[in-house]
Image (cartoon, rainbow, N blue to C red; front, side, top):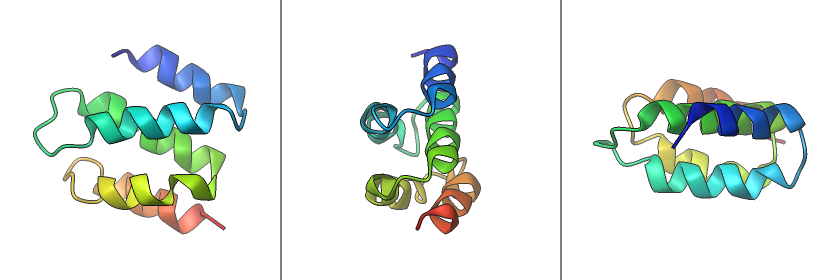
Length: 79
């Protein structure tokens, strides 16, 4: 996994990016996941995009200690 593609998807600000960010976050949100920085970039991207489809995945990310703060902020931004 690479940070650059995840950040690029966010910068596109396209709704089509949301499912990809969600799928990547779900694969990488286990508490012992070594690629947590990529998961964090997904959370941050979903925060920027503020798409309600991300709610379940962001709620799941709350369990990861390194994602909790960003996931909480992202959830607060959802409509």
